[in-house]
Amino acid sequence: MKPTEHTLRSVADLHASGLIRAEQVAELEKVAARYAVALTPAVAGLIDPADANDPIARQFVPETAELETRPEERSDPIGDDAHSPVEGIVHRYPDRVLLKLVHVCAVYCRFCFRREMVGPGQKHALTPAALEQALAYIREHGEIWEVILTGGDPLVLSPRRLQGVMGQLAAIEHVKVLRLHTRVPVIDPERVTPALVRAITAFGKAAYVVLHVNHARELTMEARAACARLADAGLPLLSQSVLLKSVNDNAQALGDLMRALVECRIKPYYLHHGDLAPGTAHLRSSIGEGQALMRALRGDYSGLCQPTYVLDIPGGHGKSPIGPNYLEALGEARYLVEDFRGGRHGYPPAAG
Ligand code: SF4
Image 1 (cartoon, rainbow, N blue to C red):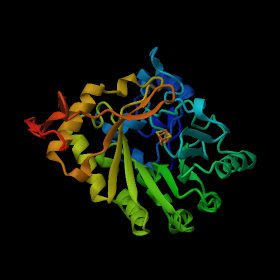
Image 2: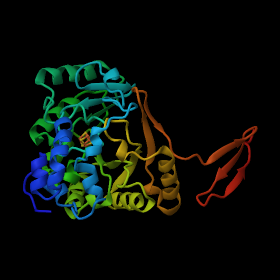
Image 3: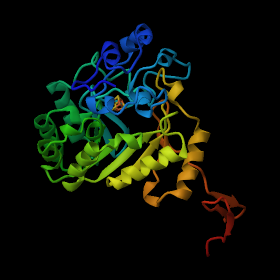
Image 4: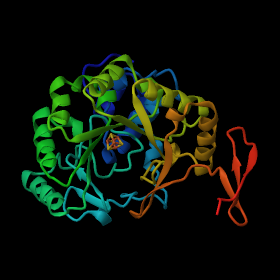
């Protein structure tokens, strides 16, 4: 493709950059009218337009299949709204809340589970009054042990604004852990400046960064260097990936991704089953395929390379692990346990 210095934000940009053909423009305009489009230069530069199945293009370049919404798909697939007591807060589990500071991202993923809620057509960020109300909710709820900054992508905020919010959260005595979910270090690594790193670490409260990465090719030298800046500052790094058709739905691609993450000191945390977001059926694999891939990982890749395969239950019921089961109960507390080659072995009942 033609190199770009700017984020591509329209179908015309994609065409001018050689990422789509002229005959695709009219149909893709309909997709872009409904779902936001953005590809940073780092992402656009990774795409091979000659490869019809390019795993980076598949994640970020719109497709006409997005115009088809299936009956089972929902605008709020994981049920955030049902658990939102005040604007910007999702309180689904007792000890933690999501704090959605911004409604924009540096890129827009074609499979995004919040695709109806993020994008330039939405409010950019919480207003100061809404932010104060969200912080008040956290202060008033002593059971909140962890705050997860998500959105939108919290690392699109300026370091000054992010540091301001981190400082207010760090000052809440019962909040012990802050977690930031982001794609920025990988898809816009230059944003990870010393000032941004300081904004996260300045207050000495435990902070974790969870990076969203779906293919090993996303971890370029620049992305690896940005992740190293975070890790070197003492921030534990975790990953979340989405199981995506023709991106990472084969054992080699998934294993390569997990190894690349571990090499970057990022511990694979979650492999999400694709959510029922509208217009994303063409990107979803089956649960059976996901389980088979998890079995393949278990045998051939280090224990460090094993994420938990999870499904967010539609309706807001939370995440459940849906990986393969290796244990079968045989009557009264006797078990058969399966090894990584498929061999099955008896295990004795518990003593006493
Ligand atoms: S970065 Fe996250 S919130 Fe933003 S579009 Fe991608 S999946 Fe959605």
